Length: 114
Length: 114
Image 1 (cartoon, rainbow over the protein chains, first blue to last red):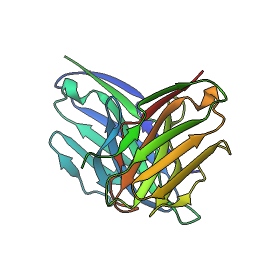
Image 2: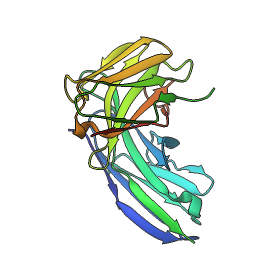
Image 3: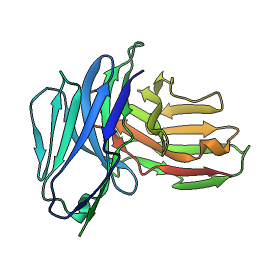
Image 4: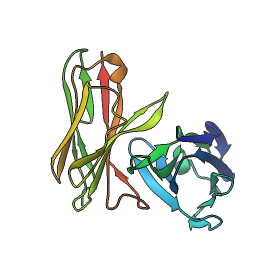
């Protein structure tokens, strides 16, 4: 069974701190790794990674994928209270029946306090 | 485009009643996904459609759940009869391509079955 595990489950930091969120995956026919940010309602897309070792960056957020060790990290530097959210990691893969699916982790809840 | 639109935003119903959740995907997106999110299990894919045709419904929990997509701009997820354990947030998402692209999520329907 495909599995995505995120750690830590919950994290509380002060504004200005740097955080690293972890995502490990075990999926058959892996194709891509996606990160989403979920604040109050809908998850919103952050990054999609398909190649190992190539960092994707957007402002204070960056992410990288290691396909050999089957994990990805999401870094947030100089955190702000607006970064408080649940961060979801998802692994995209083709199932045995040929359909493409995203398997989500349970998320890391980040709380940034002033 | 207004994004993925779901209705209702909240639904409270009694056990045994039929519940219908609705989704309008982003125009031009060929893929539509229904997810369920709970604290215990996180985000789980229930079913997805490609060009209005169901591709993979292996995530549908049981026969009480059914989904349809009569045209490219509308989909429904029906639960009949509903049970308290169906209480969750149900998300609809759409994407342009199957893989290697982001899925855009609707705001979700919070279902409570009492």
